[in-house]
Image (tube, rainbow, N blue to C red):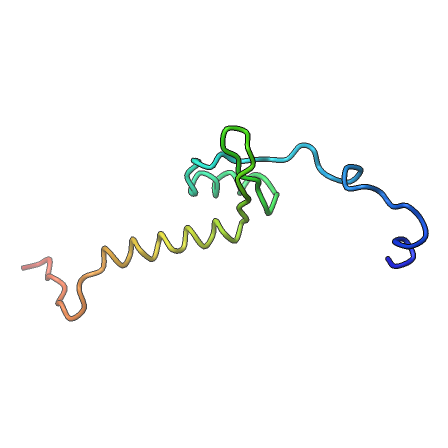
Length: 90
């Protein structure tokens, strides 16, 4: 790496970048992006709004958001601590 850096010109970023990048809109639901990620392989997606780059989102970001939503859902639906479950047989 050191030899390539100091001796000969190397390829430019433009020479090796991907131009067919999969981007996502900022208003896309996270669950829908997770579904798309099962078919596509990028680990990082540029996020755009009206064609302007707003940031990026990774697979790890999506997994964390889904996990957080699942924990919140289960926390809301859990019976209060100390309460006894109702007996369905009466």
